[in-house]
Length: 451
Image (cartoon, rainbow, N blue to C red):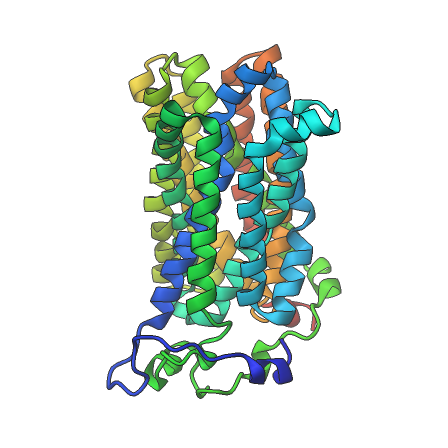
């Protein structure tokens, strides 16, 4: 956003009084809304994983066919990450997030109309599902990178890891609630009602965000000077610091940075493993472990509950380590711990025959994966504080590509070999992600690295 457009942005009135003696806590309300948005994002992404078996049975989709539907979302998600992130760095996250949430909420509602779309257009039901999920992915592509930009603008350096963990925590909370919510709705009113409910919740989230949020704390009427100084020392109300306006995104500097390449490739491998939990855990619980619909739904919530608990802990862990060591070492140790424990738990759990022991271990593996992932998002701000939306979009593009590959490769390995073999590939992806992060230097921003 340039200075002229920033000057015209409407200042939001909130219950907090900017003249109060203590520091206001608007940034935590903003982060609370961000967590809710991430939860709704998870709901609209995971719903198909739970309803997929019913949909697959109704339309006679094979396992590979469902993998294609899953990957359609992820290709839309991957291809539009960078455009959305670039727009966010230019105009700010408030308007960008508003547009994106409207888009994916409409996409969730459109799933209800897929059978009619197939009948009217003459295309197959499989093609119609893939088209709608692709468009839903386009809308969701903006969320994570824009949320990273919100964190960069609204939190202090010492809070960055924990705030990035809250971002992932929202995703985990949404994933925790989604399986039971979708399964319960689906068993009573059918899978179409479950998607309609997801759409309504998305529209509610965008209304709250648009009403309360501003791009910067300097422009929020509820932020008093004490809170502003805690976040942006030396700044003052009504004025946007020049260093926080990104008129041009330094793509060449990003692509010339070894830290950036290690970051995005490492997160691509993280995405491969993550989408195994995201897309296939329910199928795994039903087909491999023999659980019923509601029982499997409850177990499917377990990885996301672990994510919700462990992701803020991972960010907090690196923030605490920074008090006794440098940023690079703190972020690396958090990632190594998370990915290392995740790989061990996933390998052991997937090879155990006792479901009541194996499933909790795999769920905890997902949680420790996100313990590490919180630090990937924090490093996006460390490396590119002025254009963190663009860098995080680039990083998340690689994650989505990894997820799209994971969606089809996992299905293929399961069909031709076994579930254990498919999960072993995810184990090696997890290890590779942690090793690549060794090359990320969070101590130096992109500008410092290329000077």
